[in-house]
Image 1 (cartoon, helix red, strand yellow):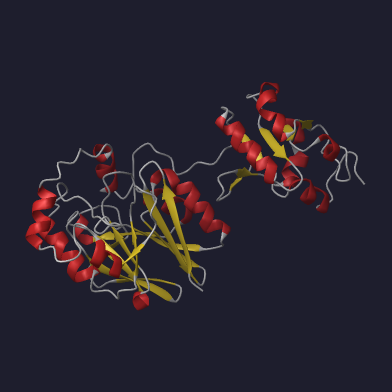
Image 2 (cartoon, rainbow, N blue to C red):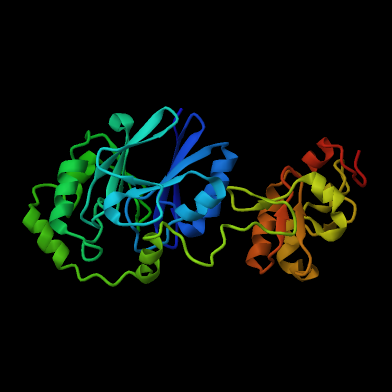
Length: 353
């Protein structure tokens, strides 16, 4: 069964897409700052990353391709026409990228940049259009060898030729929209739909007078090296304990390590008082600060010593970790499964039944 996930980077309004089949995955347009998140999802789902795929050389964010390769392996694939260096595979029109029993076809769709491609899932079940075609819009054509005439033909001939019902997933949306379809865009896209001619489109694009992209001077040079930036470490993990990063954005720690190293951390129990003394008991040395009281009592915790947050099941303690992170604490971890898991693994408990 195909696994499909659409993920969002709010800083750049970029969508990253995960597709997987039979344990093998590809990521389309990963973002540098979200590489840890994407890696966590791949690991949680037990997938092997085959490749990261770029729809084009981005000007608004740095790709996470190089970081993910260091962390998870897999290759980096970009359009040959992009001119980018450091990729493992350079894609031509008509190429296919396989993952499990599925594959994506490559369609050259230049215009936003000279190296833009659209990825089409086998059976034409969905397509990933990058910045070539957005939801009721399109990418700009005034830098990186952009060409409005090329974009018009790319959309009309290479994307609008897909089945009407084919869902289209862009690289960006600035209004919270997530997907569209060929039929919708052919009919309603104000720049490229209906009876608009190539001349109409070209004149529109040449007179947009858009602001210079804020990140272009950083993003384009880095993306021409597939996200490699000198001096940037490949997602180094915290060194105070063997932690795992969850897709929910929280560092987690194994109960056995906590039992063996309890003296080197602050054990923060965020349950209610009757739970702390109730049937599940509590971990020796833990400090009780109920979650609802944490904002008022946060000063009772030290920033000089790591904190492990604990609750009944791991849900409230995960929320506590998020709050503490926002409050300036750095070395934090959640105890997944909470006291239920702690007791089930037969670890030492004070009180309880």
